[in-house]
Length: 326
Image (cartoon, helix red, strand yellow):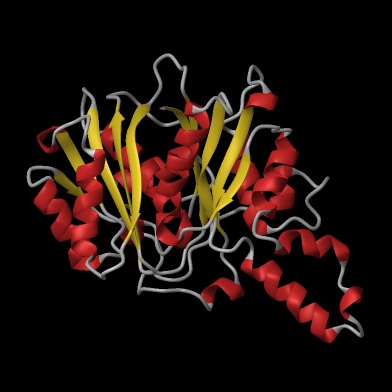
């Protein structure tokens, strides 16, 4: 499974280059909620069809726009998108309206579409005319890596030729109520384009796995997941590891045990902020950008993610020693 392009709208800006430069230079961001600056859906995407569009949907559509080309067959192109619960703000507004209006059925019909979890992926596919597989995943911070595994199965079984995979989170009042950790709340969308039959490409996803932690032993779970995906490369070949930061010392210790010589890339939360379900997708594109400035030659990166509710995910990616800015 080959990564042929990526795109990210982040607190560093709406352009991929801004994200690449910001993360590689570790440029500091304001210590406050971090929106995607200068992103107004109606101005960015046009006024037609955006009047009632949710912010998360607009971010997803904008990111996907950069990854689609005219020669792609829309019937064989799909989208696998991660989210915590869709647009929390839209869900809040629909629930509030159903209580404040004279009758629940007086809720504005156009607002209901944004209150379903799979609305973002569905509206993104409709906007771009994608007719391939369309799926929404919700696995907490592990979602971005789980999406890779889901896409791998779709591609290997011939369900699609091209898939966009990633995750999105919007910054809203409602989302502040479900925040966790001390990192500033952030929003953004990160997507990668995946293909099985591609010449060149930016990176190859060698393996993806996930498991459920039933005994509370996060350290052992991370170690087992990491060892499971390192079946095509040895730990000594791993250039860098990157954890989610949500597993605290247990995740870091496990990665050090499995790949003691590898460079430790800091969690994406340190640079960008708390992205919740979009964290894994931003992990991947951060690894792509960091490897690109590390000199010629391929780089193998081990990514892990820990969700507090008991999920651990891991992926190994071989990144080519070329400029990977989409």
